[in-house]
Length: 307
Image (cartoon, rainbow, N blue to C red; front, side):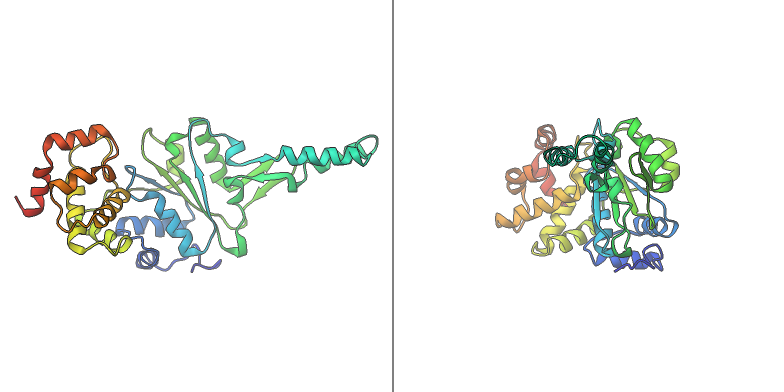
């Protein structure tokens, strides 16, 4: 576990690889190096890549390794400060106001004090960005800003300001500043380009789909009940499909689901029939399934026999 003294002082890239392996996340040397540098330099880590390559799981694994709180901000169009940073609990404020009125303390000299009470910190709802400024027990939280490319340009500019000094100002209360900066992982599926200003603030790594050998390793770790031969067949087919220019190539999560589905159906040897009846676990768009059918399940299955 990473303590408050060593959270940003992991000794080596190999230590990162070993730590993530301990959380069942198999990182290649390039990704492990990017994580190591981000921790040591106290810089956000921007991970781009196709959906399903394991970007989100990096943050989960880091949090499980460090013992820091895992805080996720899911980005979407229209995201603003009230969802991302903070808002006031209006219902509780209203109850407090009504209680004061019932007690006869909502008028006269007490009115100003009551107004101050309404904006006490106990009525503040901390959203992910504000929560990430607090390191419980001295262990920095891991803040995942997921799918930043889905958010608006305005929010991206606002986020850049916060990441510059890890501080948030609440006009009624003052400025909250992180004593220990959070570990920040930002992901993007690149549906649009993230602005250069944010990229300059971050370390960057493009996450590729794993090759067949690494995907077999991942399957054996994440789904150990899947026979080794079937895991290799699944990884081989997945790698072939990723070459076909599909609308949504299968990610690691889909290959794990597919392997588990095959095991449940008692499939030992992957053939055309098994691919046909389980393809919905691997490809989630009808157009992609139709494209595979046009090519022929038998042709794909033939790759497993070296045909």
